[in-house]
Amino acid sequence: MKIAVFVSGGGTNLQAIIDQIKDGSLTNVEIALVIASNDKAYALERASQNNIPSVVMSVKSFESREAWDDAVLAKLNESGAELIVLAGYLSLLGEKTVKAFNNRIINIHPALIPSFCGKGMYGIRPHEAALERGVKVSGATVHIVNENYDEGPILLQKCVDVLPDDTPEVLQKRIMKECEQVILPKAIQLFADGKIKVVNNRVEYN
Ligand code: GAR
Image (cartoon, rainbow, N blue to C red; front, side):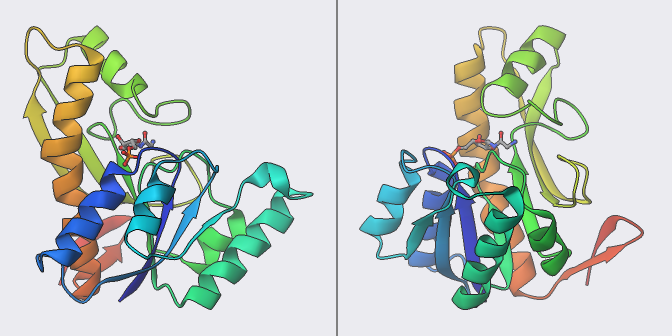
């Protein structure tokens, strides 16, 4: 199964997918294309080091959001991607793209949805909010993307303990390593194996 991975930053989740394809723990999956929202994303470097085609498509460089959406969709179709993976992608996809890839877009979120999610909750912020609220566990969620931030059906979640001395940065690092980089490749494998079915806005496994 060909996938397209959307990125905005460091690309540690992209790296986890690349590594698991390489070591054979993620099977029947090929990264056909990496799309970045900005040209500073270190994820682009990771793609090029691994000979994966990549392109920068920032909304700002198009005359309208619609024109950007059309161009993204054309690139995706050209790549043959069957699944879109948002791996630290900090923009909202265009309406046409979301429609065209109905139930075939997944996102990794650095908290246990429905906690600490929605507009503005990205990067370090969910971890700051989790510590402020005093939760004793936090984690990550892979969910299917619909037109609203972080509201689509939940696919996989994994949690870790929040420790007394945690700072947002320390908690973020633990969640990336022990949760995100584990469940995102796992979710892609479930798709590649044809095991995902969405019924009444919930995910069922075949
Ligand atoms: C990850 O922690 C991911 O969960 C988060 O951005 C980071 C990207 O890291 N995504 C969101 O906050 C989306 N709402 P990466 O570029 O190293 O994979």
